[in-house]
Length: 94
Image (cartoon, rainbow, N blue to C red; front, side):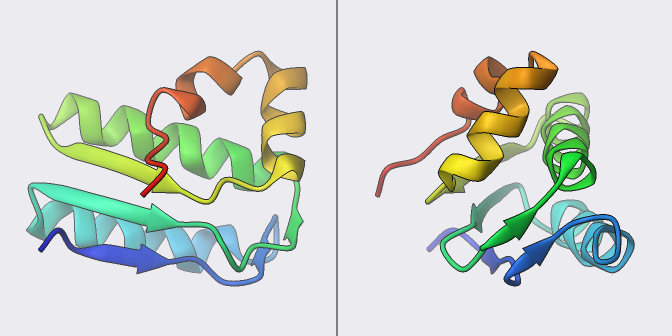
């Protein structure tokens, strides 16, 4: 079974530093990781930047990162920033 990480309800400027530490540790110790965004109800551009950084980090280290349950709010912010294709390329609809 692939390791997963469920993100908290807030994925924003106030929470990304702690989330990044946990996410980075999981990526270091796992070849594959699934992020579950089902509980995310509050997000801003810092949250989207965290996802972009995680995707980039995973690719740079030959890891597989999948993202489940991407909220419309995150997709809207990503679209404005021009990174929606990058985030959607990791989407796992399981």
